[in-house]
Image (cartoon, rainbow, N blue to C red):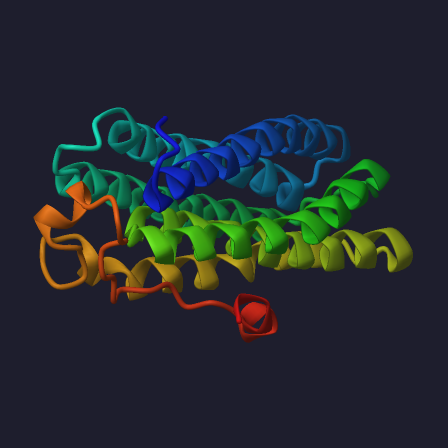
Length: 239
């Protein structure tokens, strides 16, 4: 990737962030699904499935960034739109899975075992994901990429999910509150669907997207007005 201008550097940084996301979430998915299967924890399984979806979303965005990096002279509005739509679909799949699996666990009274491995995974994710998400937002806003910023929002979702997971696993391990595990997973679903709903109007080609000739500019990033809602806890990190 050429490093002769600011946009080229931002594209390289965005790609590095997506590669870190993919690598981390592959490991997280394996450990979460393993811990969930051993403990019978629907929340851990849901969290592992979320990691798989995050890998898919990051792969779509990496493809979008790589497409521009390899052909800087072309208009990449259509690629941006397709990647943004793909990330939106992952929100829907994740929310549906969490809602159905958690409701089923509560209905049949599945009682998970405690999982120290799952608690460790949740703590690691809670410490890692906010920093990664903030870094993505910074790059996305300078590039004018809704796809990358939507992926950053999904990374923020992962931080929220890890907090809910940690609470559920902790209550189950300390007090035997088996229902805290599926309930913690169930509380994840509304937030996921909310984020998808707030972004549903950005799928078309309009003012939320940069003008087509902006992709060929090597001196400035395209203007960008459509922005993800970021938890206020992390807003101070963006200033």
